[in-house]
Image 1 (cartoon, one colour):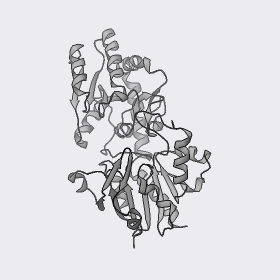
Image 2 (image 1 turned 135 degrees about the vertical axis):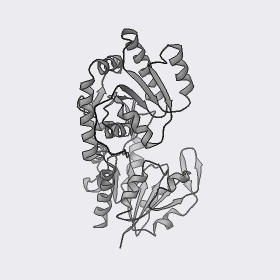
Image 3 (image 1 turned 90 degrees about the vertical axis):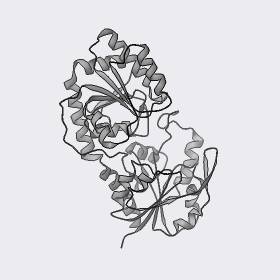
Length: 356
């Protein structure tokens, strides 16, 4: 008989579904999500789903359902660790029959703050809530170390390294002749910095490697206009948003490197899975994904981002260096960052607290 496990989450993210489907093989799994989901994503779920109802007050969410009563129907509850979900945060303060885990980045992070950039009140309030749980699951080992430094028991801290599913295929070095930017076109990611750096290289060398930009967003038209105004429409290809995994794979297969100057999220893992080294700044906005980059081995973490033009020129002139990095990135992903690896990290945490 399988243990009943409930996940309390914010979104039914399409990239989380493969992880939950793996866990559903081991547990009687239900995922309750707050914000609306697409039917095509719900149809991919090999587990039960529940859409919750809520009121939003600024950044705080108050669910209309009796969340505690719902949780009492399960053996284990894995809740989103963001304290803005008020009823999730209160679960540990009541006598309960279920085991409680919080799953989160493990440090403040976002487009407006760097990893770990929180004040004393942030850590104090989060720690009061999270210490009431039976265990915590984080996206990276760095979050574990930060919590141990603040007095958490290492026996209650687990890592499920954040990742995303990619197509399984052999690494091929042939036909890699572009650099890639992929993701929603936010200014905070530093796309304009990439474009300006690319232009500097083009002015020195018209044979600079082509740039492909895959993604949509409110900046799409402005960036397209910039490309035309600077006469780079034959060198920079604005593709628009691509969601189909097979179509996205084509762009990765043709790339020598993926560059996001100021932000490094799940695109790091997606790039690595296809054998593409990821290039970003050393202090990029991240949820911990950039910690997968071993500088110079499977990608680059640039200390002086103003020298990005030199990196682009180096990719153009020394492609073999980046092919070798890409092979190392591929091996890293497929040895320890597959969806199965993340699911196993979560399963280990659940199994551990069930034995207590």
